[in-house]
Length: 153
Figure (cartoon, rainbow, N blue to C red):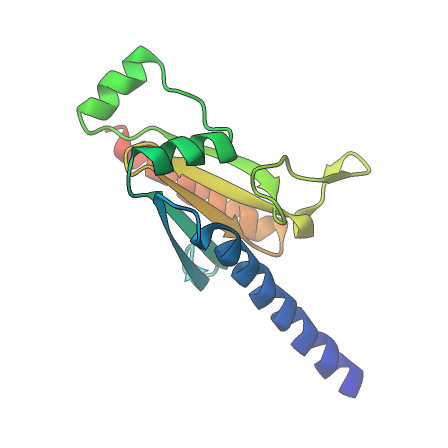
């Protein structure tokens, strides 16, 4: 029982540490502001840690585009953005380095070593979602798709 409590405490500590590491990785970057929320409610049954990076100026957005490999929008998407319609992109990435692809082990994405990033062109923000299970990641994708559908009306 003592070992189980120690393992649980270590897991909570590592999770908090990973979130702090993401925050620390980006917090000193000029041109962006960073916030980190632990246990963010994705839906009524799902929680995940989220780090948000938002550009405060054009140089910050350019850095974010380079860091996270954010593509330029098509002329049609740019016109929609000028009209207030968001363009949202999401991708699976490495939890340790969200600018890199998600790690693959035995032809499967390593869930514990991955995260999802959501990119909002309208708010010039990147949302890094870190969860522990594939079910949690499914809920994150569902939430992001709902956001896209809401913004496309």
